Image (cartoon, rainbow, N blue to C red):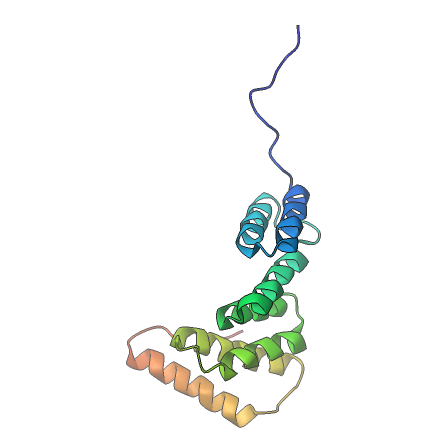
Length: 151
């Protein structure tokens, strides 16, 4: 008598990361992102997971050039302590005239300031400080919590 399982074995984080790479090879960034999100839920510390997320963001930027993807990539690079690379992405977000979302701009400005401080890059310091002060004032004037916070 053989036992037939009614339950399939759930995929491992490594399986999901491999599937995401396959999806990326076909430029299916939505599927890749969903697979990586599931991998993260399975094992947030899976080897190669953050690099795979970085690949998704870079592919999306190449395909769509969306500033929100740049903000996501910058945030991921910041998390990985790649401050110089993150600074490039946050600056690109701020330079993108198509981005009208004030919250995303505030987040990019504060993250850029944080990245540059971590690598002792004080270029644009006065402009960055002015942008941070303006962001806080704008949020407070709108009776909202600022996106800028101590770090």
